[in-house]
Image 1 (cartoon, rainbow, N blue to C red):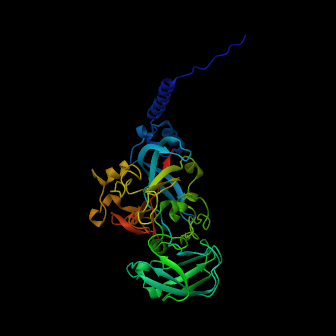
Image 2: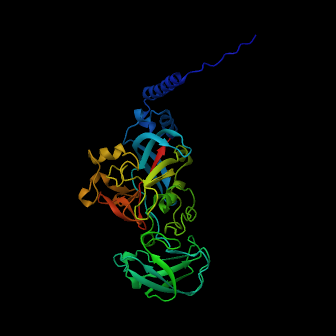
Length: 404
């Protein structure tokens, strides 16, 4: 005669006690077998500790995990610093324990945060002919006024006009306009000169906000500082080959200059490492000059750049871009967040290149300079926080990720 044994059903308190017992036993096993010294070479064991919620009882802020990474040409051992412990939100809304890692060295080359954007979108075909556009505001060398150019070839519907790049730094007589069949086209239809004048068809007035088919002066001049639409975010979160990791994120978006020559950042890691990482909620403050309806927005990223706040710097919008990482508070030796600008240089902020480990580099953060649309914060090679990291600059980065 057979018997049926019914499982013991635990209430919530019992389940919590049982889970705590499992975590305690896992910790004791590690301690008893003296695994801590070699733990950072075993990704599966690290993953299990994080999932059990006991990683912070075994590993410490500042411990390093070494992983292999390739840029497609050269292979590296990439030390990843443990910078933070805490819960994270996944894309499906679940909250789980997480362990934040950040690359100890920065990448061996730079990638544009975002390329200078097109200034005009062709909703319908734009025939060959003369056109003019007005700049509403004087912006350094970019004098307010009307400027004209002549196209010798039609631009199809869906095409764009790009030009006026870095307009505050370039005299108007050196400006050009390039026409493209689409924002993602590899090469222009043609490049034509710009002169002062009001001849031909009026395309409108460029100001500091985007209106209809005409882009913002700042995004046209220096690229866009919006993390969610940035080229560097696409590069960091792609396993695709060179030429395939980027798509336009808005009507004016243009490909980063590194697209054709660099593979996606994630392509350089093993699946073993990537499989223990989560696509986690990342919140980033938005600039204040475009009239955007929100002050911040969320993305879900496997790899991301640190924010000012996470680097224990004084944020522009407090309490939004994540908790500060204990690693940076300790490294800086400060009891309150670091100030910005060269007067606040700190040796601890210097980040060195993975391919030249005595060479400090400018290193990107994801935080937008909120007083403009074209600049994002970075850590300078001299060790201070600066807001003058024009989006079109190809700075290196020391990205972060989270084991979940």
